[in-house]
Length: 583
Picture 1 (cartoon, helix red, strand yellow):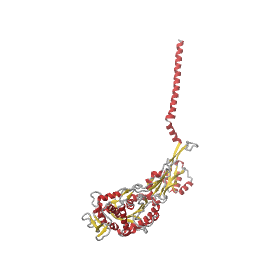
Picture 2: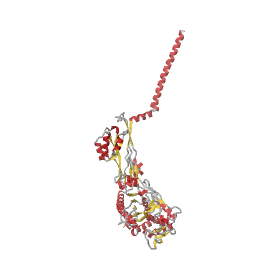
Picture 3: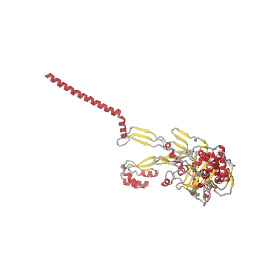
Picture 4: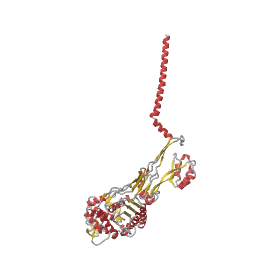
């Protein structure tokens, strides 16, 4: 019996030892599994959590690209500026600090108090402040008031390039103009600095640091010529005052490449100090690209080009022309006008025989409607489309509008009106493009501003856009000579330039009020032309909106208001371009 009792005790002891051993082994297996889970499976998550506590990532701004004119003169640059911020928790005397900063920075004291009493550890007080003011604030060494260096966009030529270059917001994001259109190219790629910090947020000496350098934005070279831009700007300002006009627009274009050399709208704005009035008045918008008008008699050059190119007429084709023409019976009775089917010449005259050349030189509406009738609506529509009416020019600029061609089927008067520049809506840029076709021998291209690009891959010159033939070289030359007669002997004598042959056309169109849906008593005076005639180097489209000088419409015509401005800008531009006189 004694032996049996010993066996039971020994068996019980073995079970306890086995249990302890299994528990010990199980514990090690569990610990090993947890180590494996932490060090292998969840390692990335733990590293990320540690990094969030110990690693601070700061973004470094990329330098925004510089914008140059065609001669590499800086039109938009970036320079460092000081911004002021506060850490409210560090500000000891909140009321006193608010009062001091309010006086120095001209900021409402309540706005500053709200910032200083906030729970945030970072509050901007003023950004991109004047360096003198920043120095005065810094000299006070106010607790909790700190400085940050930020890039600031600077426009050396301010208002006179504002409608081309546009502007950026406080964070250097392009908002208008070229700055907006090419924002992705100009912005570049921000860099990053990863630095290891201790519990108090201070950098750990010899700690982990990683730097990803910022990639600067690309530099752009534009087709704009600063000198031509400035000349057009000055002359627009003078014309606006003399003519008591609402707006003045000038577009200068190279007719061979369709590069825009100047794009001026007056009134303008200061791109670094935009006002609420600038915004509410629509002054920030580029009217040369986004505002349309009925071109009036400047359209007649395109009508004649279509008629010549199709063989419907020749230079000396004759028409018997009275001073009014009815295409709807009874429409000329009383004060009837073209809206109802009555077309009148600008001045009364006896019936006379006119050649097609005379129609252009004397700007006869009646003669032009007769040419358009012989041309026919279908062919007129086809040539308008070929020239680019109702289509954007393709300019690398935001918000370009396409204009309008109103040749709705069933509209009896629309085709006739279109021949003399009504039932059409165009931008000044489009008119420069249409006349470039006539100037260069009949070729159309997309308009453009960017001619060069420099980035990390080096310098890239941008080739002109592909060309499409619109009219024959012979037709283009014939129209140029007709337009020369306008300047030499016709309605555009005020557009003549000493020493140069000039071709162009006057335009005087009634101003349409879109809001009211009626024509007003105001006019749009314009002149579009080129020089020299045989080998045109420059197109200028001049549009003056609502001149009110003088006592009658005769004082507000394109020949009186727009042609002199054209002559001054053309003369100065040809000299600037080094074009030799040809007359």
